[in-house]
Length: 51
Image: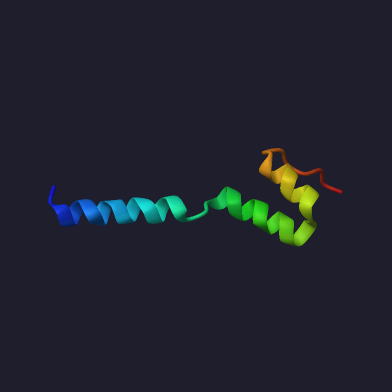
């Protein structure tokens, strides 16, 4: 593996690690739309109670 290929790999891994996944988007969406408590429950991995 050349040095350039290694640096490109390191950059790709860093960007992948810094990008939030679907779970984080779920917590953010619940926080914005429904408030802290629903976001907290979603973050804990339990589905919120449906009204």
